[in-house]
Image (cartoon, rainbow, N blue to C red; front, top):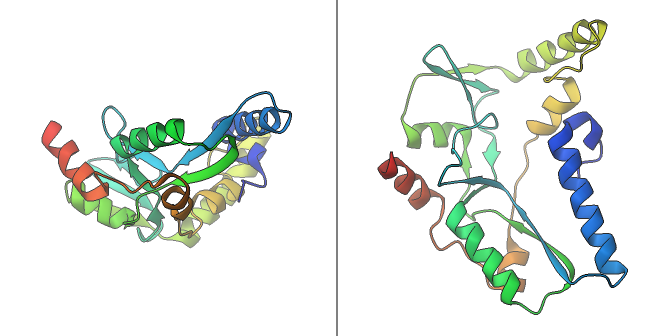
Length: 190
């Protein structure tokens, strides 16, 4: 499903949804043939595996918002490239929407353990949400939106499960490299 309150998630979310809407409209009007690919959290090459969705650096530790059991929609960059090529070579042209995530899912805790096993500090979900709620009126009084507003946190920390069944069915796409091998490759490259 699409983000129902994109304006509260920020410019990145709004821009992605607007781009998809424009492409979908152009397809419906007969202007362009297109396939819409929605990759999950891409990593590899110059795109880091550990980002704000996984954890943040804080004084030599990883700071995880929540218990670290949030399932991540990871996909390795080479696997995304494979899907783009398959989509370009396919007969799909009617604005089909296809999610791209690896079938093997890892949690924040599993990613941090696979990357380096550094010390981790987990901030309990209730405390994260309380701080988010508290930030809204304080920053609002200063005329600034809170980067950790309650809705943003709820949306970003939602416990969701992601699948790429349509990618397999419509494109014949299956991750060739996969998440674990991608992590291994990235560790070797550093």
